[in-house]
View 1 (cartoon, helix red, strand yellow):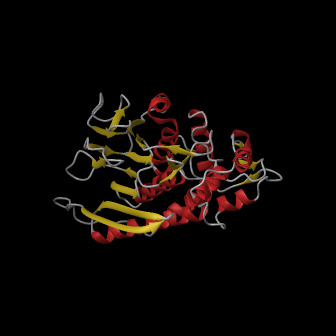
View 2: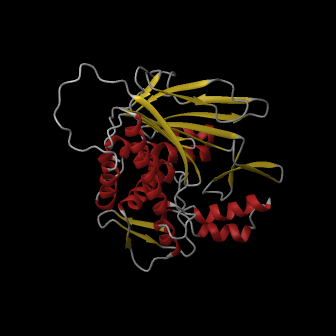
View 3: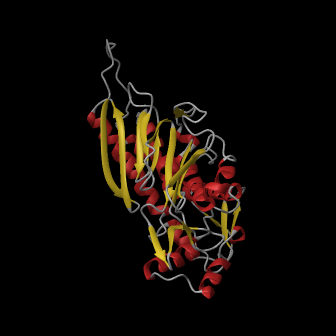
Length: 363
């Protein structure tokens, strides 16, 4: 998946979560004539400011409920590490120390998010940038006030953002924040990373077929019993009546755009997603749906594709193996759609599947 192998606390947390699923040593017994059908279990709970739904196919309801509880516990653990709303999270405390007087060590979870974010920033030429926090904060103020940022405040925020604002030492696994006022913004990658980790915990609990839906950031493992895959409807904005449906297995899908979060300022419609180059929200209405082998990649690439739009986005998508996208935008008269060549059903198999099974050690 491109992320380094988890060690230390992350491995311990995953082991403890799996222990709660009741996967002890099985006692020998007579062979079963026929395996019992799997039971579908689904539960929803609020995490990271949104509704999370976990759906599993388990050997019985109790097994499914224990696995889901372990998954939710993992998401809650990661929220305490990656949240930029919680001032006590590891990420927030690191941001508050900027500029760091010297490089600091971070947990495996935070390191893997920062390392993957750095890789994606390079592949998207900065359209995705985890250092965009100062601009995100300023844009949130504009969305509340209904006024564009003052030029002096925008310039100050932009001076704290960029590739040189963060230095990662991959050998020592340390992080240095180099600019005053610099803030990390995990939006566009943190939720996807958490969803991947939850799916890994479910796999460790013996769940082979599962879907984790973090309010639109969706990742799935093996297809439900008797089906070709998990059926996902793609309708990212009003007026999109093309009825796009994809079938996924061992894959992730996420949509980024301004269908739900937008503001109109000075007669223009802006998304909540900030363009790191301009410091303002992406103009719309527009949306993009991305399919990838993992949700970390899908989440971040969808954010970058929203920034680049349907004209520049496809060339960026092509840099990511196994990734495809569907762009939707308003052309002034009607809703228009386009897809990249490997979008399911467009020069590709009807079911998008990747050669997992998903191994927790690869996330």
